[in-house]
Length: 277
Image 1 (cartoon, rainbow, N blue to C red):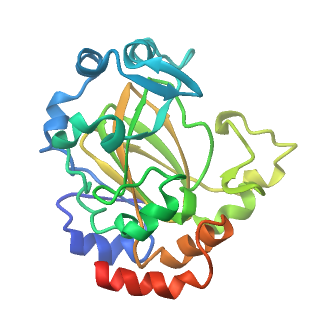
Image 2 (cartoon, one colour; image 1 turned 90 degrees about the vertical axis):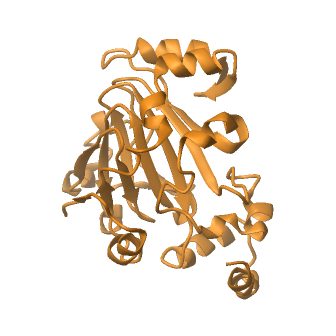
């Protein structure tokens, strides 16, 4: 498995070559023209949002305090990771600095008002923007676990500042990755830098693809593809999730299993999508 690197990729080409066949890709020039590309930085965020309170690793702290930890982060003593933070809800001032569709994620069924009503309490979706979040972490920081995105949603990550390393496994390697029975999209292995070979003997058979996304670039991680990240430098990124025809069946099965949708609602929702989109 080798992940393509592309530039100047149209949305039609993306959908045909990557979205529909569930194939990951890095597009290296998505954010080069965004205002955020030349504006965002740790000092800029500190000046603009110093007193704003955010939730990081279970603690409520100010952005000023968190960003100071990010600035001091190193491989030896890395910062925690700001994740799960809705831009429309908590940082609406940033919406004008980015393409909120991340070029390819527009038209997501997540903007369907029916789904917003049913799932809005468990994932932070809105009718205008779907699921759009801010990610910040210092050099040496890592995502807490190996996972694929909840509800089999597609993931789009645009790197605005800094470089981020992605370690990715295709769905056909799931048997080597020890899904948590209670949260099947999360691995039991914990910190991927020190996996216990006694407890997880099959992991040695897994074959990852390791890639680096640089500032201005986007990575598409399809539904069901396992991944985790490591910061090669202080990092600010934007992520969006997408629901389309290519992952709809898997999404619906997850939503039913989680108790948020009923089996008989599938046909009604399909009809609603046809009207809404």
